[in-house]
Image (cartoon, rainbow, N blue to C red):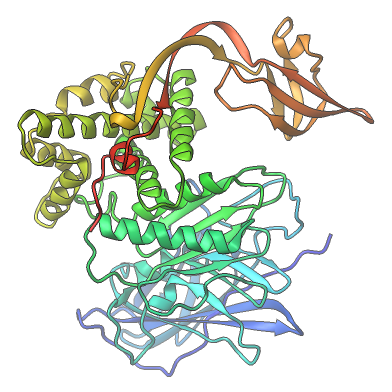
Length: 575
């Protein structure tokens, strides 16, 4: 199997000790590809900055990102021009000895971390990838920085070379050396970035004005590129309106394909003015749209709604706000912008309510849930579900308060806008500041937080939570249980006497695909196409376990009242 390597490198700039407007030493970055014929072979990286006055300068990579603690594992041939001595003193970190103030240029290569074969055995979002004439990478993997320089001014230049290799990246929002920019960059911006490019890239790589999102897609990532670009633009415009962004800056979206065996897989990472998406053409368009909206909403939540979290544990305990609120408003703004239908909005809520009802973590206290956030997928999902349900509950309460008082209705959006204004002078983290902002509008959320977040009591929505266009109905039904386990598509165990066993499923069979069925819905048959030896067959059964559970579902009213998008989402006309 042929493996390609990708190397990111920065081209040297004329040496000078540059200072930013803040007085901190500037860090200059430059990236240039090397070609072999029509194919990308490598990228070389250089980073230029002055040595510390002490004579010793540290240089290294972020310690971790999304559980990956070895971001520097793709670094090769690390060297420093202008140094008297260079030594690696820890994984991903180098000690540089040089006369204080002397210009230094760090150079290195980044090798490919992913197999370009379309069906590798695993998928790693941190890994730089290259395949023929395209590439994809994240800034925190490609770029290191001098110790203590995260807030230092930074510049970026892309050297496309004789082949004019195209690039789509939020790094292009930053100035080049000697240029001014409405968005001065920092080294933190360099690290928190996404890059895709190459001759095979498609999308809206150029735009009429900087307020339109630039979109770069690699082949095999999105089934309908034009529809994807339209959805991105609708959602980004709606979310900027939600936050009253009068002069929006540039925004970038990148899409990188994952193996086709990851059927329906969607993953992403949101940064200040961009998000990176990992997806393939099997993904549902509505699910992809909701995901885009979620990631874009992270441009504001939680970063602009309170002071940074004191530690990772505090951030995980606050996931109901960071992720749950982001889910709620991402779904609402997808509908409000016209990017999805009312039916798609209903379906994603029903899927979430089924997931909540079936989750083994439903009644787990937050103190126990938070440490498992990155260890168990069901545990990770519970704060998303709780937070979205609480947002719907509180939005309905605020609207009803306005009706009862015969006053103009207040929405949860009003609370968040107030919270954002308060954040500039507050020392509170986002969840605590939200509690204060909500109280200013007559909404006391402390009891709900104590019951449903801290204690883990079961949470239910009132029938009229979503207004006159839909009703929340409560049902009793069998719990969802597939009755089997699998690993790498191969069935490992089957419960004797269960529905899957009675339908003929056995350990050792290979599941080629799921033909039909809805995760969490025990009333819909699960149909699997399986391979047993050399024989292909289809097995169908109801994925039901013993006992009954309480499930809530959203039912649209018929005929639908006018302006359902407004009432379902609790968001009136956007500015």
